[in-house]
Every structure is written in structure tokens, then in C-alpha cells.
Length: 160
Length: 332
Image 1 (cartoon, each protein chain N blue to C red):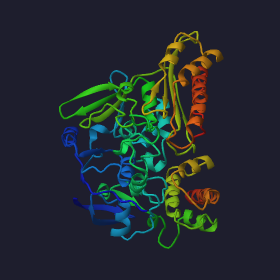
Image 2 (cartoon, chains in turn purple, yellow):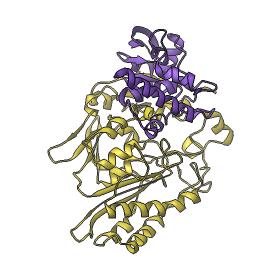
Image 3 (cartoon, rainbow over the protein chains, first blue to last red):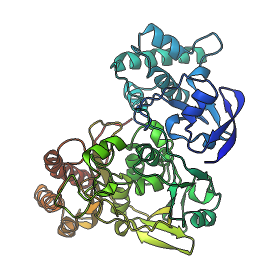
């Protein structure tokens, strides 16, 4: 199995790592770069716990090969806060108790950010469709939706 | 049990010719977006020695209208790009938008969806489960667990794009190391869960070509959850009408009920020259749904899917009759 030297940007930092051909980007992020925020739920693209942004697009990192990240700009859940200031989504998830066990939360945060980056004023239906690829086994969907709506309001006020 | 990919070598050619040369090796496999292949590899349903990635081939990218007015869709276009494209017929964009989740649509490709492997409750399982229950026909065993007396595999065609492409009279351009050919999407598939298409292993799907279409078309997809699942049933219909509202041409295709999308030829022939009155739609629905024999191999029972087949065929015909071709699901 080949090993590839991969250069990419993760959360604004230039990084490089060695990746065997069969290693997923999720495993490279977690095991090579120590970014354990992205979780492996199913490993088959059903649950969305491993959601990250690749060049601004939402992806399941368990279904991306690490060598394919060459040259890409990657954002993980670790990169969405502004230093010590939580992203409005993170803050509203906390305040709205939009999590129970929390393993799905990083994926939901990244998927919600992908939505709000392109659609600052989504309807509830649009939020539900945008988060359709993220599963929560504690069934916290309503609190998650409400927290995304609240974060959207806050982000729109900041943008004014 | 977490699943890891089996070992393989990844090669990423940048030209079609290079890729066609690489996949003439029988131990190599093509990968587009990988959203269907990688889960199958993790479950050890397939263990290619070499993966030939099509991700860096520019000839597979982009959507354009050619000189003949055809919509030419590169096989490497993602489903998200297809869903957002103003160049493709609305029915194609809405069918693409109804596939899987946002994450998957950003990665999965048109070529991958058209060539999507057939699915079944007995094959899409972890390796230990399949070993414990006895490998099925598609898995190298000698029994189809869905139909134990059958001599062939009944796994289901689950592509949403193929029924639509067939309804619109689309064709595929395939390229191999020794040449290329164009084939109607309708002729590309065959009703066998193992050999479900006629593409040879050395061929690459390069483009989907859709002729200019000015009639009415719809695709209705039935699934367990309206925002993510594979189809339990898909009905694509595309028709043209004369000034007196009589049908001058129609294609009606039922997906996800067999190992290939099924053309409802008898219903199509009956509908030509007729106005879509309630009686006509009822008879066409009977002709189209009678031959459909869903098997008990995906979620929900086969009897339920058989019941729903005429319901969705009727709804599709009513939609194109009334020109109200908004997707029946409330998608944003």
C-alpha cells in the first residue's frame, strides 16, 4: 500500500502528514493530527458524526480518502470558534440543551454552519433538510433545530 | 464494530486514456465519489487491489448544452452540482436533490449514481453477518436468500437518475482503451442483480446526454424518510401532448422494484394518442403496475411496495396531465 505525503490547510493552519492509500480523512484528522472532534459513528456515510467542510462543502470525512485532501481547505468542529469565543451555533446549542450524549454534536455544528454560511435565513424545513445527513440517537432534533434558528438570528444581527 | 477499508493502491490519472488503460487490469476498480463503494469495501463486499480514482479527470467535469441542443452532463459532476444546475431539465435537478443527504450529494457523482450497485438486505451487511447466514449469490454463494429457488440474483436497482434519464430518452457515452460507444440508458441496464448493466469492466461512463425536451416530466420517489433514503419505489414519466391534449409521446419508467429500471411499454403504447382522462390513467396504471413484482429485499415489505406502485404511477400520470410537475414532497 502506497503512502502519500499530504499537504493541506486545516482550520487555517498549514499541515502535512503521511497517509496510506486506504486511510480515511477522518482517521488522518483524528490519529495523525490529533483533532478528535470529528467522530466516527457508522463509517458508511449514514450518520454524519464525521462531518467536515472541504473547500467550503459539507462532507462525511469517513468516506474521503486522506490522500484526496491534498491542497484542500478543511474546517473541522475545532475550527469554528473564534479563539475563546464560541461560534453562535456552539453557544445556542449549549444554552438550548441541543445535545444529550454529544457524539453527534460536532457533525451537527459543522452541518449547521455549512447551511448558515450559504443561507443566513433558512426556514425550519430548510434546516431539517440541511441536517438530514446527521443522526441523533438521543432524539434531540427539535432542540437542535431551535438552536440553529436562534444562532441564525444572532448571526444576522451581527451582520447588520 | 468499526470498519476500516481493506488495503489497496490508489491511482489518480488525469486523462481518460490513462484511466481507461489502468482499469483494463481486472483487479482494478473505478471510484468516483466513493460514497457507495467505500461502505461496500468496508463491509468486504468487494476488495479491489487497485482503485482508479476519476476525481482529477477534467473531461468528466461540467454541464453544457451542445450544438444539437442536448444537455451534456459529465459523469464526474456531483449530485449537488446537478441539483443546483440551471442547465439541466428541472426533473433531473429535483431527482438529484432527492438522493441521499447533503454530505453525500457533495461527493457522489452522476456516473456513480447511474452505475450504482444493486442493493439487497442480504448483501449490504457486514462480513461476519454474511458468513454466518451463508453467502448469497451476489456474494459468491450458490443461493439467493430472497428467492432461494431462483437461479439469478434479485438485488434492487436503486439509482434515481437512471429512471429519469430513460424517461427523457438519454444516452451514455462510454470510453474504453480501444475506443468509445454511445448507448441508450434504456439499453444500458438488464434485470439481473449481479450483471445489472452492460458496461464492460474496461469501460468508463464519461457523459450522460439528454436530448432537448419540451414536454412535461416528473419523478416521484417513495422512501421511508423524505429527506435521505434510497427509493422504495421511483416513477419517472416524460410526455409530450398536442394542442388537443392528446399524448404524442411518452416514456414511463418504474425504478427500485427490480434489478433494472422497468419501462412500462404496454402502458406507453396505450397512452399514445389518448387524452389523460381519469379512465385512461386508471387503465395505464393497471398496465404499468401489473408486471411489477417487488421482492422482500429492502426496508418495508414487498406487498406494501406492490400496493404503492399503482398509487405512485397514477400520481405521476396525473401530474404530467395537469402540468403540475412540482415534486410531491415538500422540498425547500
